[in-house]
Image 1 (cartoon, rainbow over the protein chains, first blue to last red):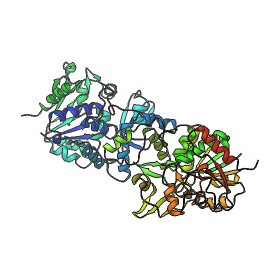
Image 2 (cartoon, helix red, strand yellow):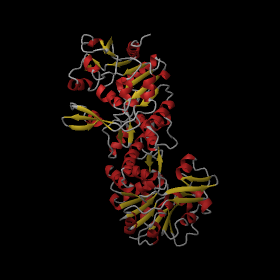
Image 3 (tube, rainbow over the protein chains, first blue to last red):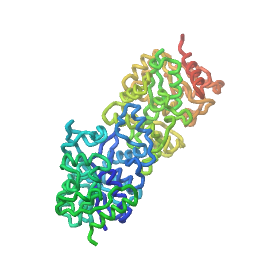
Image 4 (spheres, rainbow over the protein chains, first blue to last red):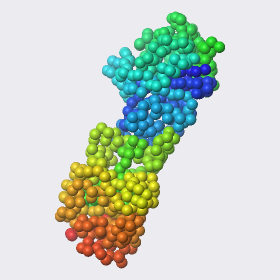
Length: 305
Length: 305
């Protein structure tokens, strides 16, 4: 079964890993958010693509939740000692990836082509596509002012309430993105933050339309459990921007874009207001490989046999 | 006493460290070779400036002879794993420096200004100046063809004989270089390779003339001991290009540029052909801080009290 997944960062990456443990990896295409991409110490860093890449390569740090396992921090500490910026944590192994990618981008290679080469180097059969090769950046409107995503998320510890999300930049879909959505037998929106992980993918020209005009079923996995985010600000953002943190509020982020919503058992009593979106109730916490697999099987069950 | 030192890499850096252990660091200006500079993984690397910087900051690895002490190699290994170049060894801590400098250079800051900031960050009072802010690169003519310095030195292990050395690029002296030479009470050519460490400094506009027209005494320290290089290809290059490895061959590399040549006791029997260059015989192997100090005191002794 050909599966196309829209994914943000850590939660999405875990989910993607679960999918390729169940579905043939070569049948899966992951469309990753690049709205959070930034330049740190002159390096092009793509946190969401990297989380997915590391998860697919089995290099991710399961405990810390982001970055590479067995990471060290010597380069960043040295850079700080020489007066360089050190607010954004880059591990030594992680920097190895950023160096290779930054060099390629500087030489004019598109992000999608570099990402393909990186996947090949790691023996990854799954297609990992940036949503766009163009510069599309997520900005947050807050009571304290307008911030770029990482300035708000990392620099300010996402403590400011969000009044609105803006995507700056005209972005065409990267090669293969629309083809993957049009050719998929199942489209999945990973359990990522709807506003800052999935919306920037939908903001790319043609992506929202491809989902609206889909012929395959489309399933979103709610990132909330009992109305709370496992990690990050998704619950606070939903409460403020959608007026609630229940399944209906999540579904309302994807109007006309999904046929089913996978929600946790903890939210099973709160299924009103879903309209024609079918709820699929299961355990959604991806605490280990087995839990991931069960979640993925529930998602795949949305496709009529 | 105001001292200006022309220095290449590792041997020069050790000598510079010895000088600032004897002379007030703020009275010393080091003019460093940049003919070896290169780009690795998109990083601007300046091996000779870095050797001097690390020696002045007390961060250098005394045993390995180059790079930083306590170094690790995670980023380079990771870069290699993703298909990046890994022929040039960059440690994690070293990469921290390269990141800060590369970012500043990309933003348009001249190399001399970045270097000054790096020295300030490390609390270094000695002025460390690149010979030039312009791109001047050392190339080697060999029987196997023309190679850039690092391609020959690191990539090919400097095994090719050298028939000639070329400096590519029109280079003006960096701010402060000519002023340091003109204002010095002693000019010292460090025990560095005359052809690939010192000659690229002399190739910068006005530097050779400043030495020729000097009012202060100028002393070179021979990099050879008993006609052999402590490390590197200086002896083979002298044998082939100057017809010998004795003190006269070293002095012939600096025609009209030096008043005295410091040679090792092992070369004391071979002082013919020095012309009006006065030999100063001492032990020149900088095996530890005491040995460095004795060598520096012999050099300083060249200045009439």
